[in-house]
Image (cartoon, rainbow over the protein chains, first blue to last red):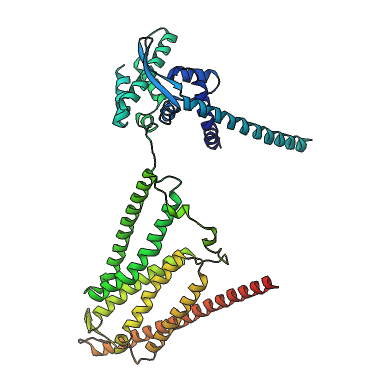
Length: 118
Length: 330
């Protein structure tokens, strides 16, 4: 049961993480600070998922990156590209639509559960 | 930091060369910063155990590297059903009949060691199936990577889908496999008998001579033993074709019954001579012939029961079908 929950949870989070990463990279960040800022917002993402995801999004043209020195160390900074901004807009609209549908379905579900209890 | 360098090197080895430096630099930077943050929190430098714990938490180098690799499968979910269809078609429907009805008979008629032909043909079939599986998989792996369109899935028509099986009855898999094994074994034995039993042969101190009736019926017997193999194979790949199965079984039972009856009408089936004791030879011949006679009787009864059983099943199914059709027309 726990394993099943874990699989379903990962599946549920997968799409949300892309959205969160794209939204968080409206302002330039490097991987370590991005991960910390997401974790501070309650969205933990492990490094093994984040860095390959950043690379994939960059290959798809949604992110742009550059190596720059920061705190006496070379770091790779990521930022949303022009295409990334357009894609984020589309994805957010989709997210809102899913959220509205889900809210309606869940309200129906809660009403059904409440009727059963009473 | 020695541990960190070793870890990064292990990750690098599993990465594509073109991206390795870039990925390792970013991964190393992230790990160094994580360690520095930890050191700041503790107010001291980390020891080897603490560094090892951070690296262990990051994951095995191969696992970390694998997350950066583009494709982790040979054939993806989109092509997999088509791959499966082609594999089943070639391995189940094309190669076995080719070997059973073309390669096997050609080898049998042109070769000298008839007994070994069936086994070597079976071995060649297995070999051909392994090769076919490998080639099909290779072609699909290339298709997967080149993203070439596949007309089978793109141009499908719902009207070409196969009809739903009329009944739920099916030939048990064990029965089908049993038919194939029985066919292979009995054919091999019979071919051996055909080769070695055509002339009198010695077994210990006794000389065995087969009656001429065996030579007369040698090929029909071979045909009936051989027929079990395709019959079992068809039941294995088309388990719902129960009517075809019943008709074939009835035909095979009838053929076996006729052969057994002709054999039963012969005066004797074998004569055994023991030069050192002619009386003993006569006695053994009598007993062996009695056993063969009983075996033939049992065979006739068994095939008759089997034929009746299949005929009864066939009648019930066809009756049920026509009733269903009449009901549907009303």
